[in-house]
Figure 1: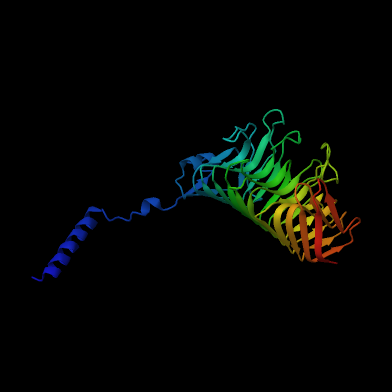
Figure 2: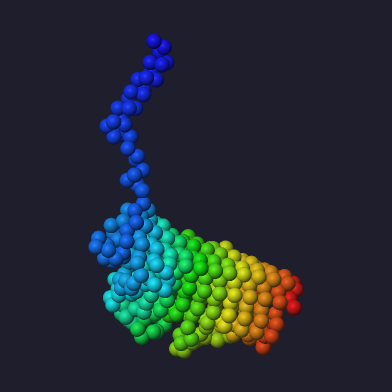
Length: 368
């Protein structure tokens, strides 16, 4: 017998035996993602489905209001029936997470979680002194949030009050250290007590695309904040973030007062094609940053304020409001280059510099 044919026949026999014994049953069968439906007999709550799910599973939330706190430590997908139909609502009592904050929905343990077509909502029932609402969605411990076609709203306490590090709609990462990341798109972030979206620390990153971020008119808020973090804010509409009572220390002096902004950004953040309307400052930027093709309408103090670094603004449009561009030198020289920036109908200075401690602020280039 041909030795090669003999070896092939033996191998085929072994293969057939393995099949007969079932040892070659598809190994991927057990790893196929399941869909867990909430509510159902097996999973009456969102958290019960999360706890039972295997990494990679999908959780489908039927229309309804789920008054509960949800914590996720594994890779999952949560899909509602629509942001106007499915709501995860803050319960009467919230337990503090690993960061000490009381948040409605928390992601931790390097989990990668996709959430869409639902609303996360407050208000909380706590106060600044006890049980204050920490965040609508909290992302920490190296976790990643992929949020789309969703809403986060009413993230505030009862009664509403300016608590430090409290009631931010979406809070990513930690400060001074701690990692979190997010892709947030086509979502509405409204009626928050602190800030709309906050990204903290150099290990954190967020890409924000086509979102609507709207403050409210009774307490001081900021829209989007990058604090030493990196990422991108593109084609978002950010409005109604300003200093409100009670908030001592607010004012137009960059050296002695506090200002609130639609977008606060630093080195490593791209700010492009956003629409910033009715904020105290449209954009407040630090370090080294380029803006492009943003539209600023009726922002109270300035459309753009650039502090302590090197900046470029390309084809941005300013219409109405108190002023156009502010360049601030507090701890280092500041240079701002304008490239085809259009400034019209402002009631104050189109360009203004603020200097202290011997540092200089310079604005160059063209505007009209």
